[in-house]
Length: 281
Ligand SMILES: NC(=O)c1ccc[n+]([C@@H]2O[C@H](COP(=O)([O-])OP(=O)(O)OC[C@H]3O[C@@H](n4cnc5c(N)ncnc54)[C@H](OP(=O)(O)O)[C@@H]3O)[C@@H](O)[C@H]2O)c1
Image 1 (cartoon, rainbow, N blue to C red):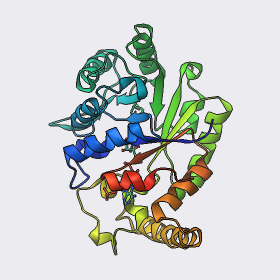
Image 2 (tube, helix red, strand yellow; image 1 turned 180 degrees about the vertical axis):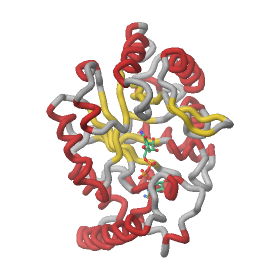
Image 3 (tube, rainbow, N blue to C red; image 1 turned 30 degrees about the vertical axis):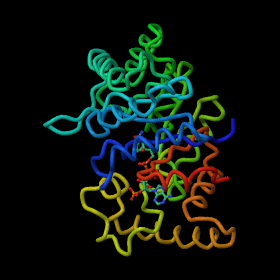
């Protein structure tokens, strides 16, 4: 299977991504579907359901052209973020996601993060029951390490694995993608731009907004990560110049080449960013 781009929609939840406008998010989703992108990835935790609501509006009238993926098991409420993979909670989450997305089935339902206090196999079993009822068509997992993935009893029932993969972490993450390939698991990768940090937006770590995904999730203020990112930016800028292409296209092409994943999810906060990222190879 050759690599395809998928649209990530964490940004459209608005939390942690700065200036995000609903109207523009909707335009991006529509433009993506009319371009080369069919897979759209969201999650209930992105903006406490707001991303799913925007995706639901964005795909209206185009459901047949979209491979719709959302996630479950990571919850946010007044107490903070926590995992809940119990059957009762997953069922409740599924119906809420279907409602927000305004659809009667999902193409892919993914366990967002493993929970050390709950067996992933047991959660997959619950999702397989949703599949029997045709509420979801495929079951996936995210963010499992190779040891966890390879020892799953229900591995043959899985459709996909979603993990982080960027030039920054290619060596650590490559074995798990090779495993997916040899076990015919579809692979989805996220974070090609390290949340935007690889796109040369900041002069120093202090410039990275404190309450942003670039800081708390992609760890841009960590001195070692900051240093490694600057090295990659310099190398990739040079290659982009040689090939007369943009930094984002260059980074995406390198990432896809390295990962050989089935899908690379890209987060685009603006329509111009999406247009820039299309056809990187
Ligand atoms: N399963 C999981 O646990 C998990 C975790 C993270 C993400 N994901 C999924 O994967 C998707 C992709 O990851 P991500 O969005 O976190 O990170 P990403 O794709 O590495 O970075 C997205 C950010 O890169 C910047 N960007 C993208 N194209 C650009 C361009 N052409 N020019 C300038 N800046 C550009 C934008 O930053 P600015 O905002 O600064 O403009 C954008 O918000 C998510 O949206 C989500 O659906 C899943």
